[in-house]
Amino acid sequence: MPLEEAVAGSAESEAITLMKQRLSGFETEHGRLQGLAYQPSPTDVAITTTPKAGTTWMQQICHQLRTAGDMDFDEISSVVPWIELAADQGQDLQAVQWNTVAEAAGDVRLFKTHCWADHCPPFQRTIVVIRHPEDVLMSFYRFFEGWFFEPGTVSLDAFADEFWLARGVPPCKMQNASYFVHLISWYKQRNNPGVMFVCFEDLKENLEHEVTRIARFLPTNARRYDDPANIQTAVANSSFIFMKEHESQFDEHLSKLARNEACGLPKMAGMSQSKLKQGKVGAGKMELSQQLRDKIWQKWKEVVEPVTGCASYDELRQQLQKRK
Image 1 (spheres, rainbow, N blue to C red):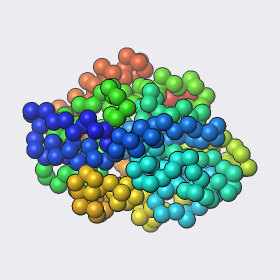
Image 2 (cartoon, rainbow, N blue to C red):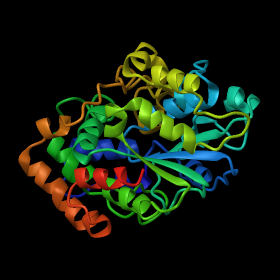
Image 3 (cartoon, rainbow, N blue to C red):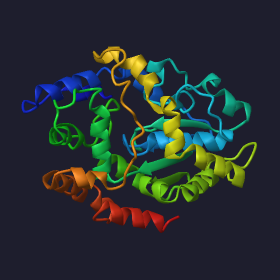
Image 4 (cartoon, rainbow, N blue to C red):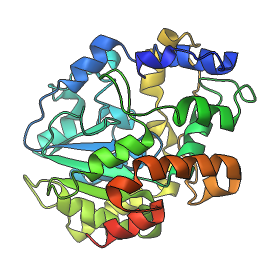
């Protein structure tokens, strides 16, 4: 995570300050900048999301499509590496060894990133996954709880006010954009034929339809990815039930084992935390206070609406659906 996020404000609780201090060790400056300097090949594809918007799900979908169902990997980021963290995990983005199955088949290489458009390497194809901000916040909070802070030490409101909502436009490459800035940075590229938007909620509603869209977007080399049998395999292997049965392959253990101690955490911290929740649509609305929801939509009004013309996430989703 960005080094500058370790800076604490006077109003921050000790727990929030400690969380940020820990996060400051998650990435090294050398490792992150090395990743952002990666020069993609024409058939490389990036998956970009704000954290907790469906990243792991999209990694699995794309990997299943390109390999016709391969599950012979340790953890999904070993075959769809995280650009910002790869060097710190000992992965060489220029090498092919991490992607033996796909490379042998002559298929595309896939990469994960949380970069906003301005800092992302120049991929010719990028899949942008977006999700309702209330659900993103709720999922992000639950993901950090029990890993970067102990349950009960940081309230949801404090996490939102002093961390998630406090982000904005990154002043340098060592910081991530806020949810809202990340969204509009990619929205501005919506007319680029090499950029495809996928809504998390659409994946939930009609996985097969969205997997087919994704298959047709991926650059073709040795074979077509939208073959009906390939689509069915990818859909089956990307279902919640299937991924839950293979949970250890989607639990972020590579980054935790590589970086926990650098964050001042026990080596096995967060290992009991599952990334695979139900991903319920609308869960945030049920759990967030009205005051916090008002803050989210005020930020939307300030940052997103002037660029998109959409007063809500649902309006934006409808607008993007019309473009399919």
